[in-house]
Length: 195
Image (tube, rainbow, N blue to C red; front, top):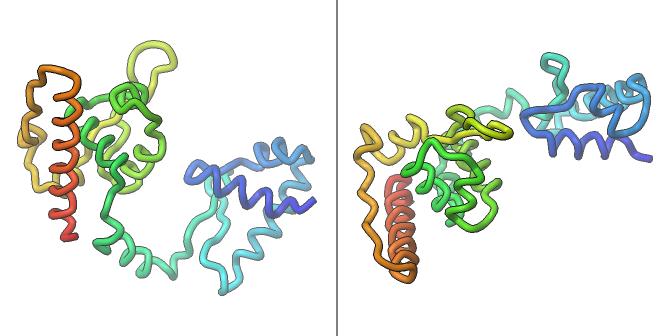
């Protein structure tokens, strides 16, 4: 069995959290010594100049990262206007968080009516949203709120400068107003990004 490919996939899926040697060994169902050999071999492969990522160990956790020498290119990518555009799902999620913060993922999903994991990940990655605490109650879910970068991005001094939400009379009007709001929100976002 090709353990290196499996470990590579596991580390990719784990993202910034990474995996400990113990976790890798448990998933592969092998002794830690075997897992360490696999990680070491994978780490060596990534050291080749033809590879764009590397395998690092930080505080006993292995994770995939980009190489330092590629930082100028990554910076360009992050700062380019094309990378600033957000999907409709991300825009909806961002608007809900902006107006209802602090708010849990479950509350966002209740409002949107669909799962919101990916849009939340995108917004956190773009530093427009961050974890601001934990809600009381079962499981103590994470609360999300907007960041200073969100305010800067939209040219706002405070959240009080967000346009007011309209008062709504019925469900059909609510949907029309929501569609109009998200269109205006997207327009504002794209104008701010220079798209």
